[in-house]
Length: 155
Image (cartoon, rainbow, N blue to C red; front, side, top):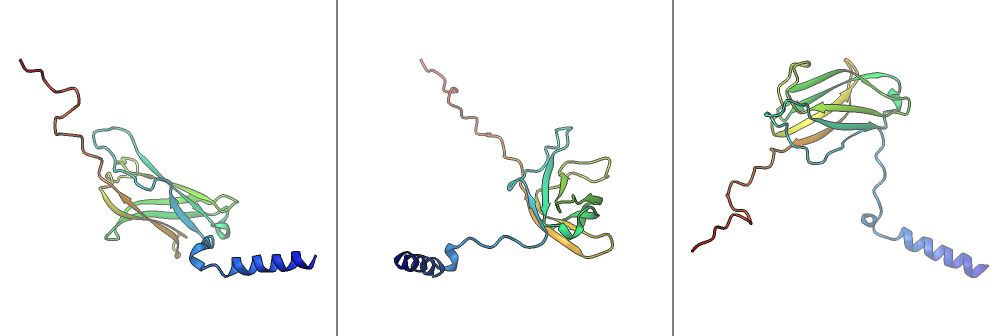
């Protein structure tokens, strides 16, 4: 029995002496916003459809069952999109759908490639949480004209 207690004590001592970088970081405390796509691409202007980037929020427990406001601002801080009512679930979660395309209903143009901030706060109150998103330009089509089957035969 004593041997087992000593072995347990040594095991605990070794695990606590590991460098902090090997240990997982503590989970975030408080409200957090997280985009569901880590590399979103701007909307194709030739397409008549909407294209959305989902941003999920968690840790909004203090605001459960309340309506918050939100916005998307460009790198210069100018608001591009605004939401007047974002519902926080009883579990403290929320979801925001960012329309990347031109939106005639909210009267905003398509978002251009660049960096943006999605923010959520109380109406007339302080910012609660924010996250950054970077919209990339769509990939360019291969214009070299080379393809595996394009080699002609010569005689």
